[in-house]
Image 1 (spheres, one colour):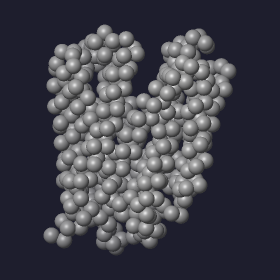
Image 2 (cartoon, rainbow, N blue to C red):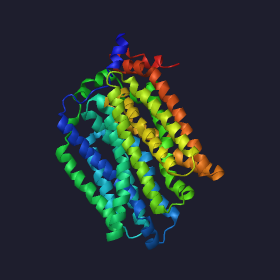
Image 3 (tube, rainbow, N blue to C red):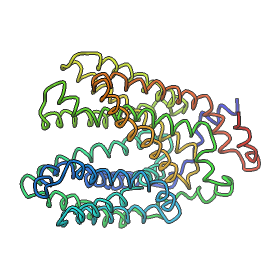
Image 4 (cartoon, rainbow, N blue to C red):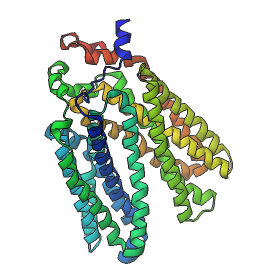
Length: 438
């Protein structure tokens, strides 16, 4: 009974006990604003593709490389840079990242040829590599643990909102002022926030005092990144579910073009609405998790399983229907639920790892999301589409959610035990890794 009560109270390290709530929301707003700047700087390129192609006579492969180099740098550098940020200081690290990607985006505006643009985009990727993981670590440090799903879901949704804003505002600026001002506008927005951030967000005010006090108890904090079945299942389950969401977002404009005969402008607008539905779903589903999981944290995992199975049912039904309004409505609903696992999986990672390595823990989650979902899903779906067509490929994609649900079920079975083991006194956990072996 004692074990159950300890788990039911969700004994994940609560680092926000000394942070005033109003100040916490200011920290969230500024960190969220920089995340939007991050994705605006990353995605503004897509809005000016036609102008760059015409002015510099670029091929589609060259344009794709300008976009892909940013994602490549994020994938390669997220983990090492997040580990450095945990040691160097998260606030100063976030500011350095924001200044770098903003100056690099300004470099894109000043580029005179393709090689210069490529170097600038490379530096954009370096600057943005660890922002998501370190930023969310700052956010969860200043709010109570029973809000972790909500804040993580809202923070991650900022990437989608930033992507839409970057393409929309970039297109408007490019249309009226030229493509260089599209990049310059994104750069100036990021630089203003980067200068404001350290004036308000102070390391001493957000650094959890209990982190230093519990350092001795935790033994080796880095071991908590992989020392339990639950946290590994959180990484894998999140990545598998993003296989579905990432694939639909990438291929939806092509699907609308091929099966609805929409032009690229209208297909892009409809796809943007679906992306926004996904972002809204992240927030709403995460709020539901925190509300229902206050007394029973394992309900968050149960809801993650429900989100996986619900999105599978809705999207499978959607792609079984012919093209039409009913199909698009079901796709929007399915994508809202599909994105719902981001909040609970992030909360699980925060609860199951030591507070001093939360930046690195979220980097590990980001790596799993990219390797298992965001990068793999679109690639495999493209290969399948070449064989059987995009519509048939989309009918298979939602089935991946069943695998994600199975992995989250495994996490639920071990969650209470792993939480107790993580927060037990150091002398009681010496043999914990051996106990985890099957």
